[in-house]
Image (cartoon, rainbow, N blue to C red; front, side):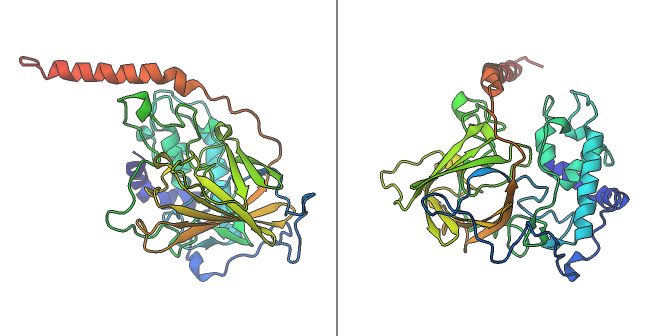
Length: 369
């Protein structure tokens, strides 16, 4: 549905964005804008230390951003935007979000959105919105909180979190990968085939497990706690808690924890984390069995943690690739994520599927119209 919607918006997107001042005029030829903001980078600044001497990452952080994981070529083909382009895009999104916050028809789906509607403008800038509200009863814009700014890293306004030349993952090997890795939208055979996020067992998206990515909908908030032998990252989404064991070894017992097996160590000011042993249900772009993700967390200023990741799987991609963004301080704390509705709705979800099967079988009987 989302692919069809974006294709339908293609012809109207240039007009819609131009009307809001977001025309992307050959930004690749202009050097990246340097942001005069000392909180983004402070050369020579040293992170505070814990009582036992490790760089201190503790506190509440957020990675909410309008910058998508994969570059949206309909907005820009360049890796960075100028300051003016970034502010114009943020303004266009804010205006469309304000319009979309108005009460909506609960029976309307994204298929009925008009090309210049507020919803269409939101989806053009951030396609994830189509998935959030695409079904009858889906979320409307009021409930979504993806962030309000283009991600700035080292003074550059990024058009994608992925840092490859085209802002996209490299081509997959023929027959590489495989597995679940999200979805299950059309799997109604059993509660066991429903998504874990739907049943509030673990978060949807990839907020918690490696690589840790901003969620296009909401709940992009974290609390980091440290001890001498662990770094604990609590995620707002379904209150997942990721435990990174310091200076340890990867498990060899064949068990694959829900969020993989994360082992870390410090290299100077940087926390380096290597995660392996992913379960099939936590596949990343189809890769899981031999997936290895390496992450680098570095405090670069009082208000920024730089986060880099590298993804490797020799069975899926020819070479390693990765991405980068910055965490910024969360203005508040994390509260309980009281997620229950998926479990309450499960009997009706499965019963509805059984009813559809019964009706289809009745239609298929001899003499049926």
